[in-house]
Image 1: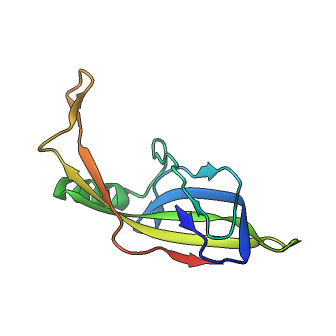
Image 2: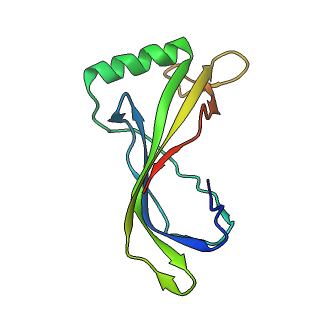
Image 3: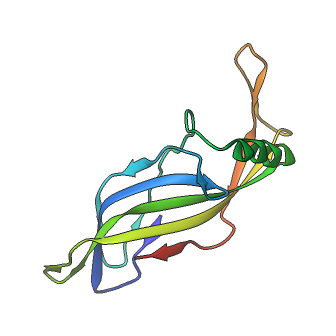
Length: 139
């Protein structure tokens, strides 16, 4: 989500792409967020579905991901890249690039939940999300 604390400036989010990165390497496909206008003091909530099937990653990243998952904690960075415009009164600016990075700590727990997946004996763990700090945003 994003909150616009300004009481005079609105924001047009023209194009936003969201993906997850692990050790500075993209590990999910980019997901597009629909364009939206955020007025004065408004909160906009986004719920992108991020997935990494078929995303090529370096071998060391795969090994490290598996080790962190086995340890029960995985630190990802959710990244947002795109274009926005500012609106002040009737004036609308040109486009600016926006880049945001938000740390996300995923805690895996096989105890107390989860489900068997398919006949192959795979296991889908319970995953809890924790935002460990605020996001870093550059415009």
